[in-house]
Image 1 (cartoon, rainbow, N blue to C red):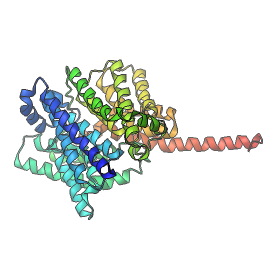
Image 2 (image 1 turned 180 degrees about the vertical axis):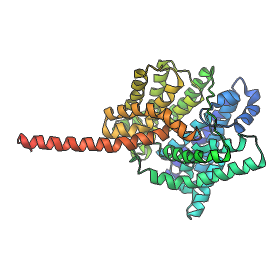
Image 3 (image 1 turned 135 degrees about the vertical axis):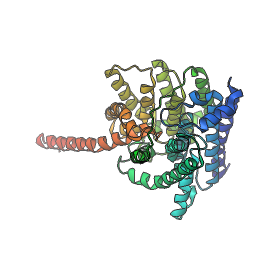
Image 4 (image 1 turned 90 degrees about the horizontal axis):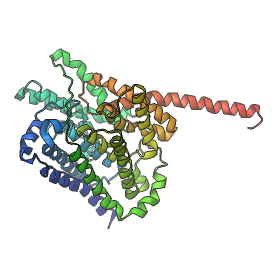
Length: 428
């Protein structure tokens, strides 16, 4: 099989995931209400925290996720110049993951359309932006809020469309610049970018009498069905992996020594099969931790697992992700907060965007990063009022930007001190 055909087959795997997800949706006990549930998901304000299992039910939510896989496959297939790499896998993972709590096929299209306009304006092919356009959809709640908050009308639909196009148009240029702010030490660069964009947008809302209400809508009672879906996804990956397990294991020892600092593309550097092994191991490790802690699964938590799954192809592995997660555990324990609630589970999962800090500077600084992230993630939510779905990504940008220069300074002084000590002792 030629390299080109291999990449076509890998892109087709996204389509298969969509088909499996839709089939799973049809097996749900509430499949008779699928279309009513989808309508509720499409017409509901979706700012954090809106669990679509609580809005539209099991069948409709899984169908919404399937639609995201189909859209991702369409975009990736149109881009015949791009091979399947770690960034693409990470983008599909986080895109499908947030289809459980915040994005639907109506509110993502204006943002993707904005990137199409940006590509035309800069006289570039949109094929260069198909992957990152999926990240920009983190601002999808802005579109739903403007369209449906005060009832759908022709005027509100036009405003939502226009603002979505503008935000999508602005995102790529800003994301490129903000990468310098955090030194590539968070994997969620678009989370930081879109967090800042929606923060400034929210500042304008009072001038138009547009208050954003805090939402906490979380499902309960679907733990078994959600766990079943997760096992379906892992099982699908294992079908590909088991036939090449020796090849995967041979390359994995090199992969887990990687720092994860952006851009650290595991597929390009180590191959597909070691990457698939890492995806299964890393995501299953964090799932196991939450199950041990007694966490009940819901839409946002499942979205966190898919995000870890995707970014385990682009920066995350157990050795750099676990220290950050342990920092979140430490912060929660010291504050006497339970480990079986969603306010712990989401920072625990999404804090792994700071994995490059542990990989680049060592496990201790990863622990510090996770500790800081847990305390900051709940604070920055107020800055964008839940209109950016990548709230934890927004937080990781600040943590990385603060820690990187401090750690560099400490390490530089330590090096100078060791040199001076060696000179005094005659050990140059």
